[in-house]
Image (tube, rainbow, N blue to C red; front, side):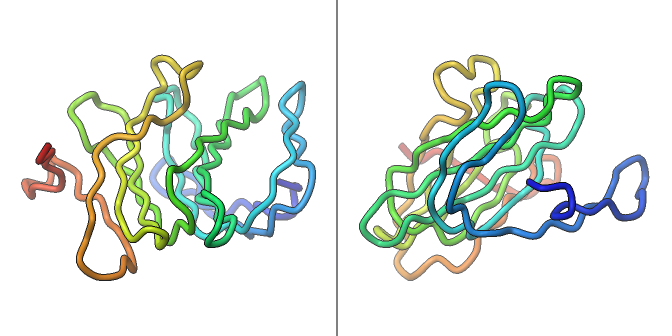
Length: 168
């Protein structure tokens, strides 16, 4: 992202607040070093997370390629002194509509949930930061809701509410 697109705001309890402008992906994205990529699509949702539990915020973006082509997740990993690392996670459905992140299994890492329109379903993507050469996130449990998916929220297990159950 060009530096003027991500603007630092005020500091809040040891964290920094950012304003992010999401722009269409219609060309080369330069991430420094050998991390260049050519990406197409429309960013439809974005979440910050600490993907690798190292420190520094990372950015996860859900990207739609329209109704006839599967979308993808783009993880922009903050690698500290090494700059930004771009990781692409193909989705197995088209038109992602919403995205949420949070701990969904008991491994202590932040997972992702994506709601898609074509077909209408929710898919959990398990964090794979312990072995990223196999993919940043791996497809896991899938849910087929009755109606359209408008949004998704992850409720952390520490809240006392049940936010995830593997019915398979």
